[in-house]
Image (tube, rainbow, N blue to C red; front, side, top):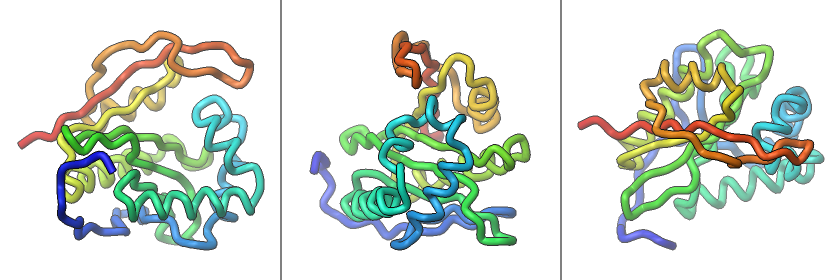
Length: 191
């Protein structure tokens, strides 16, 4: 592992919000993730194509979930499901990954179910995970990349106090194979 620290984190695996619980995935939740991906397939294929390809069945989604649990235990990444508090339904996904423990900093990837967009739920989840990353993981910076035409994610970044740090050319490939540009948003830990 590429890090200089020799201590274990005492961190929460569930972050409770007003309308949601953002918590680490558990074994046997792959089928719920598979269904969420299938329900949002057209949106996700361009945004998170690797994830969509890795979760092409309930079984492969379960393998994905178990790998994310292992990544959590190895301090490689911290993957959460976003669950509604009322019905305990999985409605989103958010992950801190690409962690560089020398700085320390990390990247974010996330999505919310199309039926739950524009309701402030992703804002609540992103704020919870940002607080977790800075206060519990002790990261100094978070960043994420957003396609130039993903206006909702750009608004979300600004709502959560992330700043546009630059433009990245030919950063992603969409499902047709075309290269697309992205914006880089970052947020340093404020002391």
